[in-house]
Image (cartoon, rainbow, N blue to C red; front, top):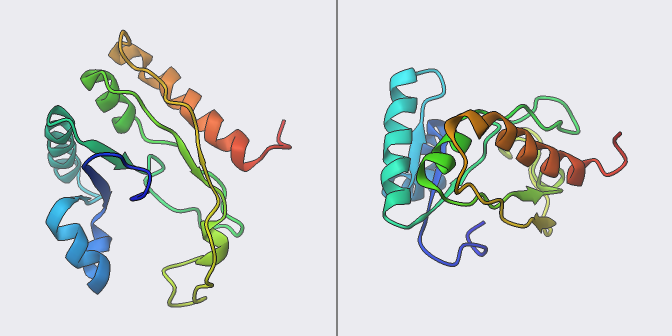
Length: 157
């Protein structure tokens, strides 16, 4: 994701990333932690994300809000917040599908370890949000979900 961004960017992610020594150092300095169990944390995180977008920076959000417990993983339903945020700020969404990172490192690396390799990434066409209203967020969310799902599961009906 870092190589894809052409200008400054910020990640929004689970606050558990703060506990890992390496990701914790990085995450404390430029990113937005989010406690998924706290509505107040979510409110503060999205308020900060709104400020980041208004500064003209890119915002990277994994809209699932979790990693599938099944092996191989299954794409989880998306949260509404990122799509409302994009519509409110009139910024396009750039869907990105990472096809095989789970095959290289299934968990956090502690239980199953990790394997060196390359992640296959599909960068989709941007989806414009200008002219959309808050009531369009659900349709936008489904559009992005389907684009990523269909890339992950090309034979699915």
